[in-house]
Length: 450
Image (cartoon, rainbow, N blue to C red):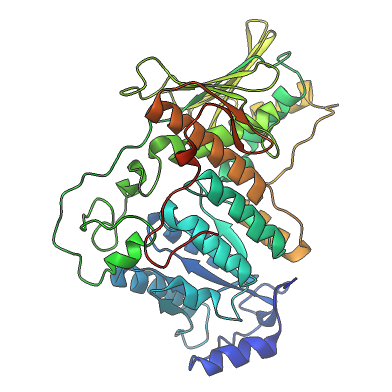
């Protein structure tokens, strides 16, 4: 099993061989706890709105050195390189730094021996392919959600990560927010009684791409952006021109994503299954489409072992129901009601007491002697870095991320085909009914998932 390489010698050799001046910083610049020769070399694959936040977050950590960025768009690629080099220049004597390489092909990043780990922040249709190749190359991986496009891809991702002994974090950062953990601990410890029902709110399913052709974006390798997806003419909705500040709508189309069912659904389905207790090795046993499945934006249902029903609704957030009460949770929001009495409620920044104060009270009153304690993390990125150092799985390991996205795919199948079917969560396959074609997809050109 490959482990992270932190030697000063390998760092100097790799940078000199590449014709790059190594980053030699005085000890006062960096934390005394992390010397320059101990930093983790990281490459970022995919430069857009989401990854720019990741760049800032990881560059602020003294144990990390961002060595390279990759994007198929020249403008975004160079912007990412500039962001990294400007940051490190401010920390370097003389105020200059040119130690971040920029590539258009992800294989150039994962082929570098001085890069220990990669961030995968591409459109969804690339996640599985890059993850598998990165794992084979001995890189630890942080991959944005939703993890992949099909059930078969999810199995291949798990196999690659485990076979190669990699530390993998899914970008489901809600797990590292206190309100979500407390909500799930309340449910798992029976505070609201035996869980009977869950509602998870997010947008609707995907659709087939029918966008018209536009003049190509200069500097964009459109063929490589499409990669394994079907060939089609360029449209700026899929890959916006220049350095954009919004989340592109490629995620609305089956060919590249799965609509909001996989996008926001990957967040709230993850929390739902964490609260139900099936996030790592379980899942639904039955999938029920709404009557108006062809046009519906919500209404599909999942039935879990024990009869727990999860309904997809439109209103954002997750609510757990039991005979003794209910728990609602969303980003920065939390509410607990028991026996009809509101025990805690924080829905807006101006609410008092504060969210943390209310969570303190809830934990003291209802979880002080809890038998079920869920993994605690208050920094999703740091949780991954800690896992790389200790070689222990982080809070959202690959099995959890793939179980979540597979459940999202089942919901999408309900809207797309409109048929009730049974699911074998252990085998991750249909038990009865279902569309076998949905389990995999065709790949274009050289791109394949074994």
